[in-house]
Image 1 (tube, rainbow, N blue to C red):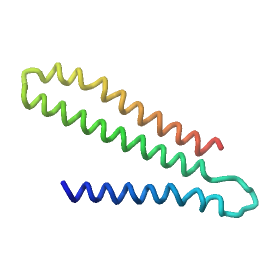
Image 2 (image 1 turned 180 degrees about the vertical axis):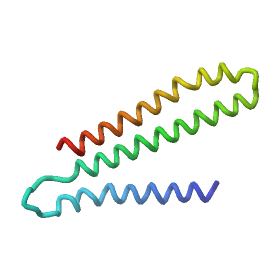
Image 3 (image 1 turned 90 degrees about the vertical axis):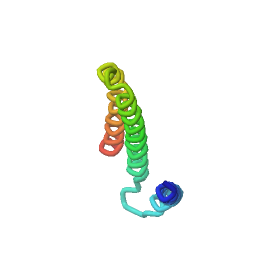
Length: 108
């Protein structure tokens, strides 16, 4: 478990560095259009956070449901029916966030 926490800390540090450096690199680009490319970066970061958050939420929800079913197999139907609504809501949040990211990328 310790290795995965260190790996996650390194990934978070890398993401923080990219977040701090990328806007400067985007503004440093000289071009004829003069347009900013920061909306691409923002859409990518937003989509990544949404998908990672939804994935973590779905993982925890599924783990709790499976553990509950393992403890009380006779209540599997009730647990599964109570499990489905939050699962669909989490998936919906991720899909809507990805849709918003695509709108940001392709509309501007």
